[in-house]
Length: 94
Image 1 (spheres, rainbow, N blue to C red):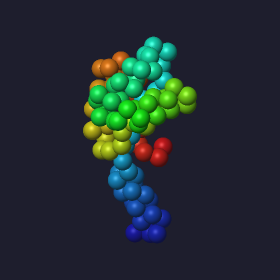
Image 2 (cartoon, helix red, strand yellow):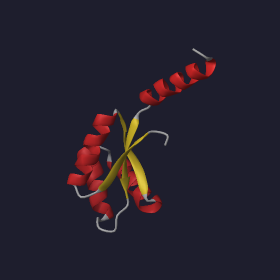
Image 3 (cartoon, helix red, strand yellow):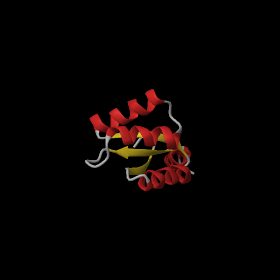
Image 4 (cartoon, helix red, strand yellow):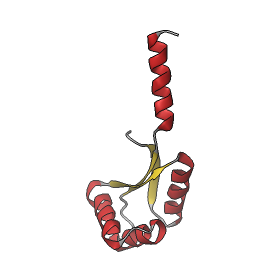
Protein backbone atom coordinates (compact mmCIF):
# COMPACT_ATOMS: atom_id res chain seq x y z
CA UNK A 1 0.00 0.00 0.00
CA UNK A 2 1.36 3.41 -0.94
CA UNK A 3 1.58 6.28 1.51
CA UNK A 4 -1.33 8.04 -0.22
CA UNK A 5 -3.54 4.94 0.05
CA UNK A 6 -2.68 4.67 3.75
CA UNK A 7 -3.56 8.32 4.30
CA UNK A 8 -6.90 7.92 2.53
CA UNK A 9 -7.72 4.81 4.56
CA UNK A 10 -6.79 6.58 7.79
CA UNK A 11 -8.99 9.59 6.89
CA UNK A 12 -11.92 7.28 6.11
CA UNK A 13 -11.53 5.52 9.47
CA UNK A 14 -11.35 8.87 11.25
CA UNK A 15 -14.49 10.07 9.44
CA UNK A 16 -16.39 6.97 10.56
CA UNK A 17 -15.35 7.61 14.17
CA UNK A 18 -16.57 11.22 14.10
CA UNK A 19 -19.73 11.80 16.10
CA UNK A 20 -22.93 13.07 14.58
CA UNK A 21 -25.00 16.04 15.73
CA UNK A 22 -28.67 16.95 15.90
CA UNK A 23 -29.26 20.53 14.80
CA UNK A 24 -32.46 22.45 15.54
CA UNK A 25 -33.21 25.24 13.07
CA UNK A 26 -35.15 28.45 13.52
CA UNK A 27 -38.68 28.53 12.19
CA UNK A 28 -41.37 31.21 11.98
CA UNK A 29 -43.98 29.12 13.81
CA UNK A 30 -42.85 28.06 17.28
CA UNK A 31 -42.63 30.43 20.23
CA UNK A 32 -39.27 30.79 21.93
CA UNK A 33 -40.80 29.65 25.23
CA UNK A 34 -42.03 26.45 23.53
CA UNK A 35 -38.57 25.71 22.08
CA UNK A 36 -37.05 26.12 25.56
CA UNK A 37 -39.73 23.83 26.96
CA UNK A 38 -38.91 21.14 24.38
CA UNK A 39 -35.19 21.33 25.18
CA UNK A 40 -35.93 21.02 28.92
CA UNK A 41 -38.53 18.27 28.67
CA UNK A 42 -36.97 16.09 25.96
CA UNK A 43 -33.23 16.53 26.51
CA UNK A 44 -33.43 17.31 30.22
CA UNK A 45 -31.44 20.53 29.88
CA UNK A 46 -31.52 22.82 32.90
CA UNK A 47 -33.53 26.02 32.29
CA UNK A 48 -30.47 28.22 31.69
CA UNK A 49 -28.99 25.83 29.08
CA UNK A 50 -32.35 25.37 27.35
CA UNK A 51 -32.70 29.15 27.19
CA UNK A 52 -29.16 29.56 25.82
CA UNK A 53 -29.76 26.99 23.08
CA UNK A 54 -33.15 28.50 22.21
CA UNK A 55 -31.55 31.96 21.88
CA UNK A 56 -28.82 30.50 19.68
CA UNK A 57 -31.50 29.00 17.42
CA UNK A 58 -33.39 32.29 17.37
CA UNK A 59 -30.40 34.59 16.81
CA UNK A 60 -28.16 32.50 14.55
CA UNK A 61 -30.72 30.26 12.88
CA UNK A 62 -29.60 26.98 14.40
CA UNK A 63 -28.03 25.21 17.36
CA UNK A 64 -26.45 21.83 17.97
CA UNK A 65 -28.58 20.25 20.69
CA UNK A 66 -27.03 16.76 20.87
CA UNK A 67 -23.91 14.87 19.83
CA UNK A 68 -23.43 11.13 19.50
CA UNK A 69 -23.88 8.10 17.26
CA UNK A 70 -25.81 8.58 14.04
CA UNK A 71 -28.77 6.39 15.01
CA UNK A 72 -29.24 8.26 18.29
CA UNK A 73 -29.06 11.64 16.54
CA UNK A 74 -31.63 10.51 13.97
CA UNK A 75 -33.96 9.50 16.83
CA UNK A 76 -33.49 12.95 18.40
CA UNK A 77 -34.26 14.68 15.09
CA UNK A 78 -37.40 12.58 14.68
CA UNK A 79 -38.45 13.51 18.23
CA UNK A 80 -37.91 17.19 17.42
CA UNK A 81 -40.15 16.75 14.36
CA UNK A 82 -42.79 15.16 16.60
CA UNK A 83 -42.64 18.33 18.74
CA UNK A 84 -43.08 20.43 15.58
CA UNK A 85 -39.49 21.69 15.42
CA UNK A 86 -37.29 21.64 12.34
CA UNK A 87 -34.20 19.47 12.99
CA UNK A 88 -31.51 17.84 10.89
CA UNK A 89 -28.66 15.40 11.46
CA UNK A 90 -25.11 16.04 10.30
CA UNK A 91 -21.64 14.69 10.88
CA UNK A 92 -19.88 16.74 13.58
CA UNK A 93 -17.45 19.26 12.20
CA UNK A 94 -19.20 19.66 8.85
